[in-house]
Image 1 (tube, rainbow, N blue to C red):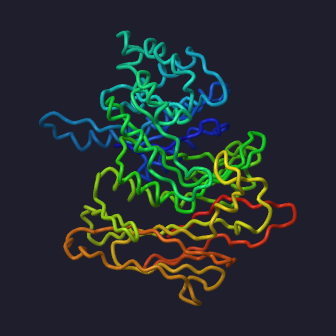
Image 2: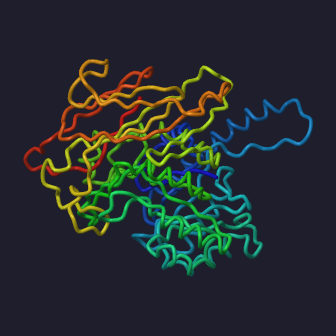
Image 3: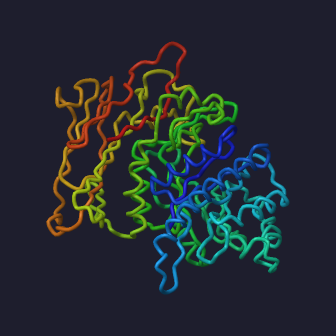
Length: 472
C-alpha cells in the first residue's frame, strides 16, 4: 500500500531545485510516499520542472543509500536494497488539451529510467491520467513504443497504467478494462446537494477490479471550493467533515493505493501544502480565497492515518463516534504523539451574497445551503485529555467559557503496558452564529489561535467557502 499526493506541475513556473527538495521533504515528513506529477502538453516549463523534481528526489535517494551502505558495511549474507525514500510518477492531464502519442512516449522514456520513478510490484512503471478516456485506444501504441510489450527494453518492463477516467463512472471504466491495469477514482467529494460522501462508488470499483485482477487507487481530499468564472467553475462541495469521513472509508475499504487530491491546487481549495510564495502558484482569481487560508496543519494528521491504512486493520469502531486506535511500537515509552487539528470557514455561510456559487459540481442550489457553520476537530491522544475551543472569547489559557472535548480512556488501554495506544476522534462544534477569533487549546500541548470568523461581508464582497486549518 502506498499513499501519493497529486501535484500540479502546471503551477510551478519559476520553481527551483531547492523548492522541489523542500516540497519533497515536507511531503515525506507527513508520511506521503510520493507525488503523482500532473502535467499538461503545452506548458513550456514542464520539462525543466520535471527534471528538477526527479533530481530533488534522487538526491534524497542518494542520501538514503549512503546511510544504508554505512549500516551494511559489516557484510554477511545478501543485502536487501532499500526502496527510494520518495517516489514520483507521471499523470497526464488530458482534460483540456490534446496530447500526441509521441509526447507521451518521450516523457515516459525519459523519466521511467529514474531510480525514483515508482514501479508497481511487478516492476512496471506507474502511469496515470486526469481524465482522457477518449484517448484510450492510443495507449496500446504507447505500450509498444516504451517497451515491455514487444521487448525493445526502452521502458524497462513496460508501464502499469492506472488512469482516472471518473467521468465514465465505475461501470464505464469496466468497459475499458482491457486498456488498463487499474483505476483511479477522482470521486473524493460529496455529490451535488449532499452533505456526506459515501463509499458506494469505491465499492463498485472494487467489485469490478476483483473480476479482472486489477488495482484500485482511491482519491482522498480535504476540501473543495472554486470560483473561477474564466473556467466556468464556481461550486463548493460539502467538506466540513470530509477529511475525516473519507479516511474512515479508506481504512474500511483498504484500496491498493491512495492518492491525496491535492498537494497544491490552490484554485480548488484542495491543497495541503504550505501557503504560496509566488503568484504563479495560484490561478488568477483564486488569490482572494486562498490568501489567509492555510491548510498545512492538516498534514499533522497524516502519519497516524497513513500508518493505520498500511497496518490494515488496527482499528476499533463504535457506532456513536468512529474511533480508530493504533499502537505505536516506538522504543521511547515517554514519546507523546498527541495532536489536535481544527478547520473552519472564516465567514458565516450566509453573511453575504453567495457569488453564484452552487452546492456541488453541476449543482443548482446555493452553496450556502450546503455549508455548515461549524469548527471541525480531529485529534489523537495516547492519554485521556481535554481540548477546549474558544470562539470569540477567552484566550486559550483557561479564561472564559469554551467548548470542551474530552477524550476518555479507551476500554482496553490497560492491556498495553509497553506501547502507546493512540486514539483518534472527530468532533464538530457548531458556531451558532458566534463570530471572532478561534482558539484551540489541548491539555499538555498548548494553544493556537486562528483567523476570526466574520459575520458580515464588506460592500462588494461575496462569501468565500474555503477553510482555514489550525493545529497544536
